[in-house]
Image 1 (cartoon, rainbow, N blue to C red):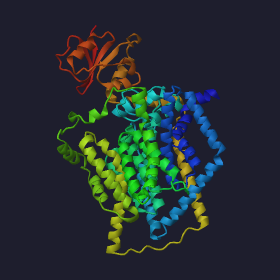
Image 2: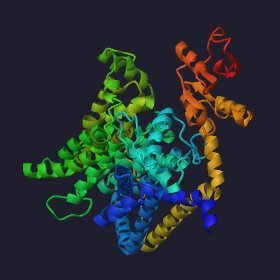
Image 3: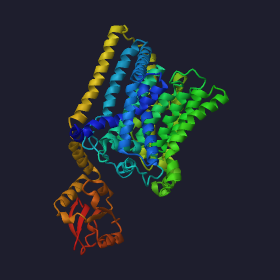
Image 4: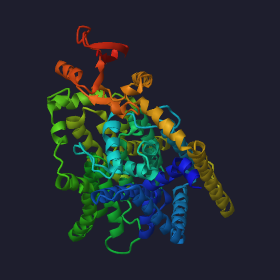
Length: 614
């Protein structure tokens, strides 16, 4: 039995690790708070709370220097015991959420023509969601793959490995650590930081939960156009090439936390509280806001915008005392969670080695030093997509009544952040991605509003009346939906985790995937070159500024950094007794060092590999 578990542990533990980061902690918290709303908001809030809980847990145990595989397993066992003991209560809450969802669906299709429209939009939404998962078997983006993008490899995942080893990460600049901490938890559960595909799978799920939260908002407000907004969000992410979240960047996760926060925030009472102050709701919203801050610095602006919009829509008509109490309850957990890493970084670790503020304010980082010209050029460069321009125009349509919060999102979140981005962060269009899901929500809803008004004014359209589905058919439909969803989940598990159930399979796939970091061709060439060398050569290192080499299995022990663009570094590398080889990203002139090193191979006059002459 032990040998079976040892050989199959990754296939068995991978889904548990994914459940831990996405679902289990949030489910326990929500079950204690007695959630009272539809299943879509239920699931999206569970996702956000799980990530925040895991982050605080990793942070706390690392501070105490006790984070380990054994502690993590004990934590998991306690969670499963809790769920087993309180399974009746948890099941009851899920049934109540499903019942509320059913009532909200009936309310949204009460206008009979909405029935067919809802089916159509739901079908398009499902197809759209499939776009988010279309790369599941891709060589780089696929399920059993690794992080390959530069920042993900040398920063975010390096920090995650440090957390998993019970160490504080170094050289983090001012970047928060929620995502690396959750990746670290998957490494701890799997017992191997070399297995990255579970952490990478987490990044696929962010947009999906964002869409789920928008569907929940649509049902709660009985506004079918918000589903079109969810669809718009998918395509906006697609055409804007924001799918880089799949390779490990965290800009889209910030956007998804904003989506969950906005979707939940327009229901001032998520838990059916009878008190004057909805304490549970405010604490949950503050926790999600703190999570946004802990993902990336942009999250602080997300939460600040949310406070303004929340005040206008939910608190403005209350007394000053009531407003002050509600805002205090909302803000305190957000500040506590969002600042937790910085308190450790500056007061406990005392790491002042990097300064992100100085970096983004450096004029040399931007192509244009004059700020207004920089703003103009950034709009010209990055707003070239017709779909993006169309979305921006749609978002500017003012809305009143029940959906006036869409206008508030535009004026207090989308426009301000876009202007800030163009002035200070336009050196990378990734920094604009946090607004995309909210922009899609507003644009899609406004497109529905525009078309509905145009169609009804030009030509009244009559849709055939339909009868409501009776109770028996309703039950059959519910069973069929449950069966389809369960079958889908089982098939994914069988195809991804169980079919390839030996640890050696996962390790081999991960090793192969890591060759995609940087240049696959040169990585493969160098690896094959050293595999043909004698064992006595193992200690000789490669001097290079090709930093990906330090993250390639089999080549990592050989990596030694030298800036070979500078001639003095070249000489130092040659004099270094540990160095036996030099790898230039750009091939040097033939006269350089021609008497001291011997050319071995290159790739299109790039990545020239030399061996030192004894």
